[in-house]
Every structure is written in structure tokens, then in C-alpha cells.
Length: 256
Image 1 (cartoon, rainbow, N blue to C red):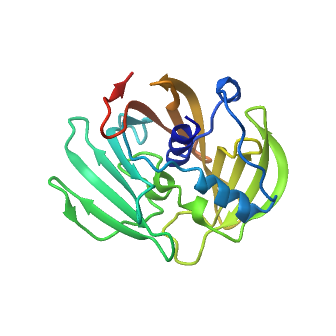
Image 2 (image 1 turned 60 degrees about the vertical axis):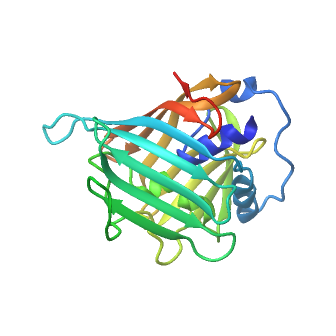
């Protein structure tokens, strides 16, 4: 149960509510040496091996005197494969494909990104990772949570997030990384090694995007993210992600 919750928290840049975490029975994460890179490695190690199919909807605030953008999103995750693979597909309100990013991450060596766009999808050059996707406040870098694999991190303090004790970790973006950020600031739950909060920062260390979970729900006896909110700073424009279906291949889909 912990592993399924963790994949949703990590893949969607989530931050689980304190009461919801306390309601989940089971042992805490194993003790780890308090080094930043070691903590991030443990967070990644808790990704589940079983494939997951996740469907949801993106809703962006109105902007530039235009209605807010609505898109469907599908995530196909197979972190237990070798190499691990994650595929993110953005569709319009009618379910027609718009863009797709596939990230293949081997156990050793660099990951590769494969991009397609249009209807039907066709291979295309990778877009500028600094730009938002389809008029929302999400970039491809946000969806991929690539910062969890960055190294050279350092622990900068111990703070509370959502009333839980956290390591505060800052990690620089590697040279050549496809990301709009110079660094990321992460709040990692000390007990369960969950990512509770994330901020993407510019070269001056100023946050330019923040992510937070608004609610959780229980599906097939497992706690899943229900509503996620991403805020661009300093504009405070928001995009919400609502999860509708979570499916493990070979089992019946679960919808709200």
C-alpha cells in the first residue's frame, strides 16, 4: 500500500496531508543516513515495481482574457522495468492526442526523452522545457519529477510541511538538464520519506513554481492523490490536476 501511494506522490509532484498519512497503517521507512543524496536515493527506491495507468484532468486558471484551459492527461508508469519507463500524454477535452513525452531511465547511465505531438501523434523535436504545457502552469520537467534523480544535493534545514517534520533539501540542476529550474527545494517527510512539498527555483534561488496536494482518496484499500495544485510565482496562476482513474494492468480500473 505504501508503494502505490508513493508512486502517485512522486509522479505527480505531490504533498500528502498530515491527517491522511497518519491514517495509513504500517511501518515507517527504514532509517537512512542523513545525507541529502542518500535521502533522495531512498525516495526513488520506494517507487513500486508494478505498472500503473493513471487518468485525470488538468484545469488552468483563466489568463489573458481567455477561459481557463482544460486537458485530459494519461500517465503510464513502469518503474519496475529495466529500463524504467514513464509516458505522459496530454489530450484535448474530447480525448484527441496533443502531446506526449516518454522518458526511459536505465539503472545506469543517462535517461532519454522522446517527444511526439499532433493528432495522430508524430515524432517531433523536444520542446523548450522552460515553457508550460498547453497553456497550463505545468512543464514537462514538473511532470517527470526529474529532480529526484539529481545529485549533489545538500540538507539546508529541518522544517515542518503540513505539520510533519521534514528534511529540507536543495539540489542543483545538472548541466544540460531539460528543466526550467536552476535548482529545486524539497521537503521530505523524515519518517516515511515522502515528498511533501516541492519548489522549482531560478538562478537566484527564488521559487518560480510550487506544488501541493489538496486532497487524497482511497481506492481499492490504497490512498491515492485526488487533487493536485501547481502555482506559478509570482503571478499565482494555478493549474489543478484531478485524478479520475487509477488502474493496475490485469485488474479492474477504479474511478471516483
